Structures are given as structure tokens and as C-alpha cells.
Image 1 (cartoon, rainbow, N blue to C red):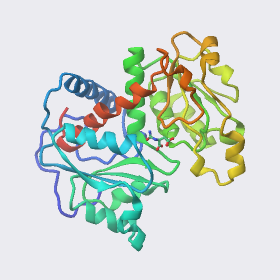
Image 2 (cartoon, rainbow, N blue to C red):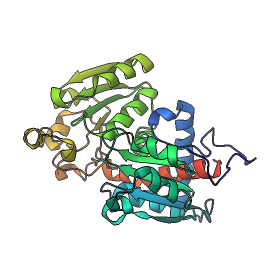
Image 3 (spheres, protein in one colour):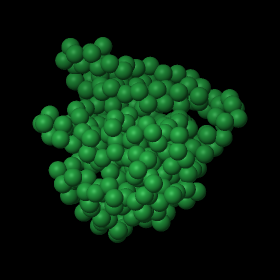
Image 4 (cartoon, rainbow, N blue to C red):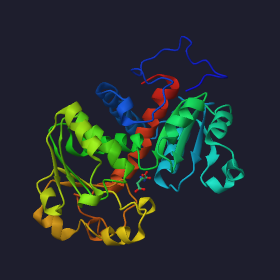
Length: 325
Ligand code: NCD
């Protein structure tokens, strides 16, 4: 981030393992030990939430949410997290009410907002926009989704969900299914999964498979077992199945979207053939990818996953803004 008004480099205690005053643009910005620290801190935040302990770590701090794309969970859970830590929130959730419609550049918007807030959470349709924002911001920037590129805090609470459900993070078989070309959640989640030495089966029709560079990068960096398939049957043995929605807004060809809109559905029939302990995860929203008929089953953890967004985002905000665990 640029440094215009604030100097955070004073002698504040830093026990957050290098997260203090940092941008979070990509899951790849984090080391495995930093991810572990965030997940540990998330567990403490969850305990505080459950016991209704009042927290004031971020009193007098302000978070700005700049959302140039629709959102329910991400914006509201970030806002809830900040307020649970005693902080305040400003921002917009509809780009049409911001000066972007007057033609203001993202760089100028961010520069100005960074003089009103201590941290910026940005969602934007353009890949690379979070990194661009960070260059012009005087305060840390958290990427809350940049086009089809990444969504790192989603990956953090996805990992947290696996840890809470499976009581471990390593040595699992993870099937990632659906629109793997366009879903930014996958482009972050797969790296988190690989970091902890799990195997991955990417299940998608050829046209929607994960980008080749990403497959190569995952194999080169982590040396984990990676398979590709297009059949949901190949997910039966998995410990975790993760299915984002088809990303309608990112299909250039509406016919192509139509062809794939209902390509995979996780339903009772699938679960009757699958590993008894399989957990079904989704960043939500779901469309037809997950049948509501399985909502009450123990395997279905997607609503719990959505709830974990708050403690995990509390941990991230606290560690970046206070430098403390
Ligand atoms: C995701 C997103 O915006 O990438 N939403 C979310 O943050 N949970 C998933 C999606 O829109 O499909």
C-alpha cells in the first residue's frame, strides 16, 4: 500500500506473524504458518462470539467496504466482524451510488477512502483490481473478490470449516466441482487445500476446468496428487466436496451458460452413493448445484460455513489492524 497519511511502522507489538498492516490480495500472500495462526485466532474469536464476550480490539477504527459487485455474505459478515470487534463501518454496496458512475478512477476513489478509514475491503468485477487498489491506498486493502481471480478470505473460512468439521486439515481427499474456470473462490480455495497436502480432484466439463497454469503451479509448488475428471461419480470417495455456482455473469456466451447451468447437482441420490462422512461445501449462493432436499443432512455444512465467515474475518481484521493475535 502507498503511505500518504499514516505511518504504521511505529513500535507497535507484532504478534500476528507478519500480518500487521498488510494487504490481503491473494491466498498466495500467506505462508502456511500464517494461515494456521489465522485459523487458531478464528477459533478464539468463535469462542468469544459463542460466549458473548464483548471485544473492543478495534475500537475507534473504521473499515470501508467498497463493493462494485453484488454481495450478501461477504459484505455483511465483514461488517458484522468489524462491529463485533468494536469498530465502525462505512461504505457502499451499490456501485451506482458511488462516484464511479461520474467516471472517477478506482485509484482516486481508493486514495480518498483510505484517508477516511483504517482498512478497505474491496469487491470489484475486474481481475487485478484489488492489487491496483492496494497500490493507491494509504491503508491495508483486503480483496473480497476481484473478477474471476481470487477471494482469499473466503478460502480462509473454507479451511476453517474443514478444520472444525474434520478436526484436521491434512491428508484429505477434496473434490472441487463445477465452474472451475470462472469461480474465484476456487482459485483461492485450491491453493489453501494444496498448502495442507490434500489431494484434489477437479471435476468439471472441459470448457470449465481450472486454468492450465493453475494446475501446473499447484503441482510444481505443492507436489500433491491432482486429478481431473468430468463425472460427479468420481467425487464419491472424497472427504470434502466443494461446489460453487455456475458464474452466470462471467460467461461471454449466454448459450454456453444455459448448457452448463444444471450440469451437476448434489442431491440425496448422490449422497447415498458417497462416503458416509463426506462434507458438502459451497461458498453460496447456490442455485441448482445443491438440492434443498439435503439441507438437513449432517453432510451439508454450507450454512455453518457461511456462519464461520464472521469469526474468521474477525481474526483477519484484528491481526492486520492491531498486529495482535
Ligand atoms: C462468492 C463470490 O462472490 O465469489 N460469494 C461469496 O463471497 N460467498 C461466490 C459466488 O458468487 O458464487
